[in-house]
Length: 408
Image (cartoon, rainbow, N blue to C red; front, top):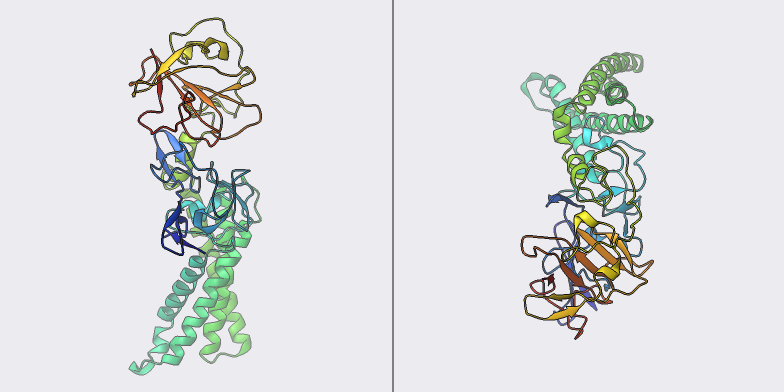
């Protein structure tokens, strides 16, 4: 029997057995910019140092980030309603429903929980419960205020009238919420946010205005016909007001203020791995539009001084074979990269990764990295079949302080 211990988001952190002994620890990346890179929510990381080096590849359970199912073979998370890519921090398919038409974050239909995954979760892929609570409370309170003279008639507070008023306002709030969201969801991607905001706001205002107008009239003794007339008036005023407010909200989302609010997109556009604007990405295209794939690596006969050299990005493994590298403990390794290993650009753009064709992750790879402050001539890292840095001479795994083998 095992016991799972989660954080405030419901993500698995520690797993213990019936004796209380820790049998597994897990960690998942947040949604924050780190060293010009994007740590998208849900990506597995090393639980000991919170890095993406030496990340465990086997787990007791397939559940993890916010309790959802991890499809590790595909680097995806099954969030029930849709599939989520933890590398990009985006869903693979758009949300057909815009829950908050006046909130710019909600118009990115590939985003997760209003682009605020450090605060909210989406357990089942359905509508966000907090939206419903807000709509009910705000709608109810506003309608109580509107009907306060009726509720407090003669200076005596009438609880029944207050409850009826709150109920009608709550129904109107919910109706407006779902009507506005459904209307916004009808528009295709790329449609003017001002237009979407105005139309969805008008739809929400019309439904909410009719509900409160007719409902308030009926609870105060109006006839059915009079209630309908009052509802129509409320719909007209509500629709007009909703269109104006929705259009303004849509316009704000297109301004610099809206762009600052949409910090998730700002972060991802600057740091996302698969982005042509990110100079640390192998897909970097000098800031030009369009994501490209790395150019085929051509073999070069030029000899770099040590490890990878940015002036000679096309290098055969034979250039490094036979060179001796040394780690801080003084352990020496003679580089021997098998001929069938295929080179690819390292994720930080400062080196090459040699791997078995068709493989993924860090298992059985050799990294030849470029110059750094502590390794002026570059360094090499060797990974075993478990994706752990190790010494290929004695087979011993290495700590972070010793897994860099420096070129002389």
